[in-house]
Length: 493
Image (cartoon, rainbow, N blue to C red; front, top):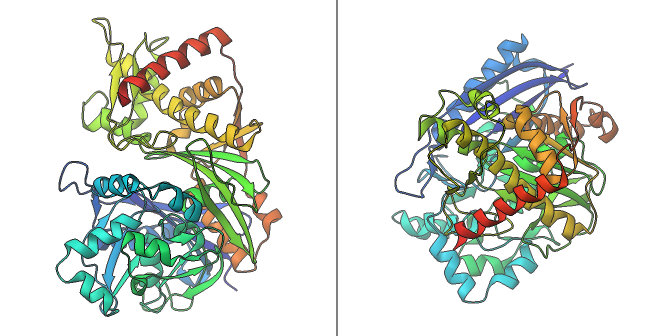
């Protein structure tokens, strides 16, 4: 009997495959990066064939590292960059254009027009989201309107839309299944958050034909089976799907109402489990589906900062201040403070709670004495300040404080960042031994969906590495927050 789980974690800069036991032990892991494409300023694209190639290579590498073969895989879980949008030909499976990435801002003017026309309240009531180029709806319309003949082909039923989970399911099943789970559907601006169904009013508003849409399925349960692959045998069930941030929430075992986590990846994403009711945010967050399992839907409040780890990459690739991302902690720790320097990493606009598409990055407080170490420290602090904004809004919406914030993602390995986060948010921060919670969450969902596990067993898969507690003086914290508030004001003016 097959006895292991395979998680495919398809992210913004690379694809990771992880082979884990039913008890949660990682047997093998492989990450494969793929190129980013920037055809114009503020445009970000991915080549879907490069993504698919990276997934195949990652799966083969993870199986080899685990010293198992595909026949040992009992079930597959998928997690993915969520709002990234792709349209392909149903017959051939070939994309009609590169994928438009969640960071892409090309539809900002369309979003501004819809807001000016008064659609904001309707969209928030129906979908739980705000009108922003971040989400998929306007991206789909752009592809249909800017690729020759695409809208007519869509009307004839020849084209399929999907976020990356949908594309992977289609490829893994030999084109047999066109489906997305509720968490990814909840990020499109097209799904009614209460009915968990595509909404005709939203489809009309965003000019998206129903003919291109996938079937919406639960987050756990059999979605399809592998067919015709070179790297996995036929018949392996796909039993878990969740967007990356929901998978991380699940992977941190945030199963109780009020549990919260923050993932520090390319961006930073904070989510709080709010239970079975889709409560609307009053403080600039969005309401989203956390997961749907066995007919029960759990919702979450979410705040997204578009740039987090990407700011460190910018210091490395754009400014050449560091040679590798791992160097930033030691460089930042070489000075006792940022010496008054503040960095707002709004390199792709500001997400929650500001939702300012026009905002751009800002560095304030520079003097002749400023060094690259001060900039490095200000970058880490800027990431933590962004997350503080999200957590502040979240506690106001939930009308409760945070007892513990669970953290994950690559940047969560940075002790300086996580301690500063604890100090600024004035909250205990818990870090697991394995900070890649998205992949673990996908594996946990796959186990539950295949009937091999339950929530109690899934929770036991999470092991704690370290807890960080606030140690900053109140007056020092207040001075830091005042400096950040001033920098945000300048960024948005």
